[in-house]
Image (cartoon, rainbow, N blue to C red; front, side):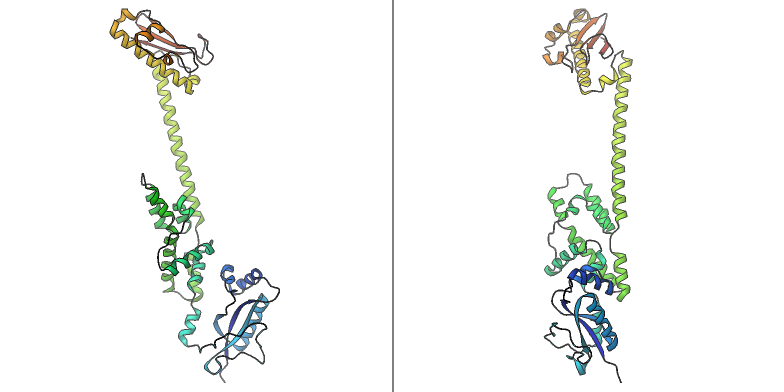
Length: 370
């Protein structure tokens, strides 16, 4: 005689004294599904298990589910007993309500639909970490049937690293190219941050469609988890590479500045200038050196007007009057007045340096010919 078959139906309720978290954790281990997905089954609505089982196997599965903390009942499959429960051996548990509508006879096509994963199940398996956040938004996109603006801080600050983390390789390259466009409009960047969730939704949906056409059952689940998920190594590797590039850039810039200063010091030595290195590298030292150069140029301009004899023995006050110099130019970075000497065709301008006393090692001296 043909053996009766039954499906196990989750009522959507919990066994007394069991929390949803405990039951979900136990059922997740039993069915090898994400805990977040199992929690959605406790909505108060019946949910049939996808497989139809012989009587004894169905009884055992029901016992495991009850032990996990979820209410369930057995429903006969077949035209002869469409709405019948196992009453004599397996009475439906109390207070689990009986479904309001009788179960329909299961045709081969219906069984195939039962075994197929829902969109949400596919998304959970593919997305992996952070699935609750993304599946909620994917459901919104699916319900609206198109694009919707959904802000993403990761998309605003780190779009390239985010795309690498989510294994969206081509999008990572595209985001990198966009980030390198100079003067990119801020509104365009905000638009990108509000679009990355939808971009990810289209990516995930395309990948799920691709895999669904080629695989079924447990193989499909395995392929979804493998092809999806995250790649932290790629994201962290890109971040480390960025830090390395910045470090090398700053180092190169620093070396260039040091070389320029060294060239300046060498040029000063060739011209007979005394520029103490430690003093010159300070902002006040640089300020003083700039003013000394300006004073030297002023002496040259006055010399062109008066001739070399006309500026012989010129002092600072005379130069300031002749060249109409501002008073601030006459003082160094430490508010000390410069000394000017024009003798025998040479111009010597001296700053007393940080200590304010002439004739010691911290003096700045510019000594050039006319």
